[in-house]
Length: 239
Image (cartoon, rainbow, N blue to C red; front, side, top):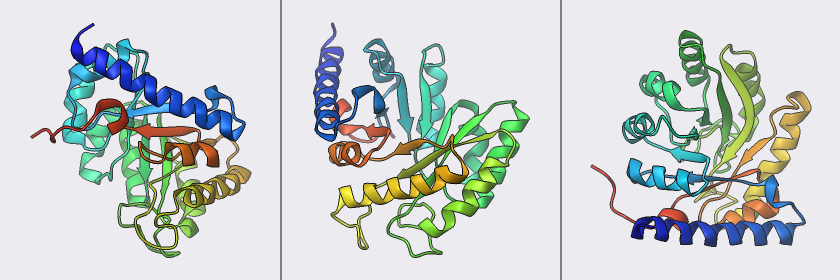
């Protein structure tokens, strides 16, 4: 193995042990939690190594990095997740490679995603990004719709051609009542997921937790965790 492959294999093994231990502590089966490796700032060569090591879900948060990387790895059996704040002028590019957009937080974005998905005959999964630091009618510091806006936005996604409502996503908030209370935040997201599934039973995906707080997310019931640094390490941004 190359040095980088050895490094990534060791890091993946550590993360795997953390997820397994968290599942055991929560009385959950390991297969109930999907690992998404966030490859932002890292090159396509790392994505290729991760694929060789068995990773099947990767995430990006900037289209200018993600587009070329996805194209370079188009031959790999990967599912691409877009997790960053998404401007409508980037929708055409993102829809060309993203299997799931986890950061859907406004009606205008839903309309743009639907139009492009229909145009190129793709189905794109959508997660409503929930801002737990927002008031009932506001957006969060890092994007996301307030809990009070979930129902209306979810209905719009569900009825939009080319789109599939998969569930909810959140980022642990840095301010507001849940700041520093990651597990409470993720438990709130699970409650909101329960509410959503009453109207949309297939929207079962709950994406929460990152390198520092994946245990709390698993304990709360998250179905997907987004881990970057713990797998790939720390390095300067590209460009």
